[in-house]
Image (cartoon, rainbow, N blue to C red; front, top):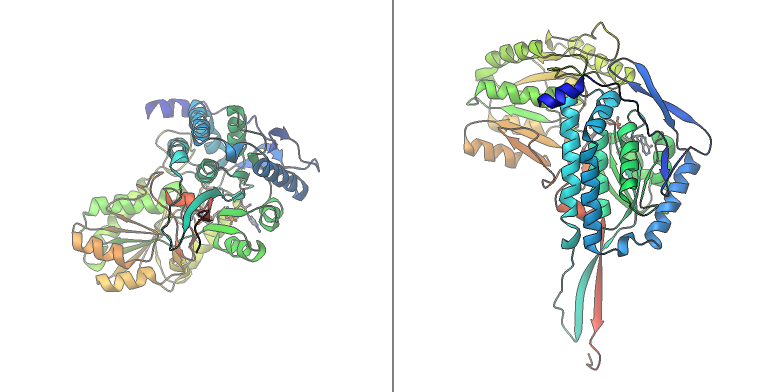
Length: 493
Ligand code: NAD
């Protein structure tokens, strides 16, 4: 960790890769258009990157199509694909400091957290490298003179659209299983944070993947993203982002394979018997991680009435002690929000909380410094009908809500359109199991938070999306099952 912080102070890195990656070449956009990416810690422009328009995106799709239909990738032996994925992991590892620094510059997350993301990305490539030669079908005994078996084949050309809150990590979660299964892909990073994805594309290209297998188009969602979604040459869309855009993708995409990783309004439940310090630590981690800009943020903190006052007191003290500021500085836990627009949106939610009668106990203000910083904010006496308890804030806001009984809290936890993640803090095993079974969520944490790894499925119930990323199950997103029935020659029916 110390070496991480030493490197933190030398963040004079200049992004070197700002071009589109199309058919194995780093190119400018056909229109000559570029767009600026901003350092959220300062509000200053970092650099301009190439802006993919519809035509550029179509070129990338054509390259991926050709590489899939004609190219060697899907026909490569599993061990070759394994070797390439391992080489990608090694390459990222070799450039891990650069990538982490670039991520913190572009996204604003504290440097130690960018290092966590980079390590997780490396692990994901290694994990899916291990799956390449374990993808197989079944033989199925059917009546008659037949041999019946299934083959798991790559789905084809994948359009992979990722958000700004985990730019590199989300790219890795998508690219690694797609490539492991033999697909070709076009990655569209978020326009707010294109830098690590563009560099990742270059690094993967340097590893020696065939032209057209991975393409990266930085550009706007309603242009480049939409062109991917609407293209008939794209077989599958893997999307991580907001529920609203997820709905548009379902409407615009026609019949293609789609997986959606969307928003959350995640309940984190603190039972009466919980260790108070552990509960405050975990609920703080879940609410404030990445300045609250996490789909799995614990944005509804349900606390049992018996320990409510003591919890609130400790939670406020912990928020006050949280160091907010330059994400390159040692000890900073809370960086900036991603943009002016997000900052305004979050401030709007904070104002609504005050207006609707929640008790603002600390924070609630923008910080008087350049960049997009908001003080860690704690509301108590939040009720289920308040906007801050219903909508995804995506900011550093803890909403503390009182409850009385376990059945009541499970019902209230589930009273949301979302169902991504839930957490419970308790010493009692029965309570842990009852809550875990009762909550509608794709992932439940008991006495921990964000403890997943590349092998653990991740995804949502209800409007948090469908399909699961990570783990063996993610391979299913990138495979088609083909059933083959062969009549054995010479045998009549
Ligand atoms: P967003 O939906 O605005 O954008 C996500 C991506 O979609 C971006 O690359 C954007 O350019 C693109 N896009 C926008 N409009 C599009 C369109 N019409 N067609 C195709 N692509 C389009 O989301 P965001 O603001 O970047 O990210 C925040 C959201 O992402 C939050 O709601 C958060 O909960 C969610 N998220 C979910 C997960 C998860 O795994 N469930 C993980 C991270 C973020």
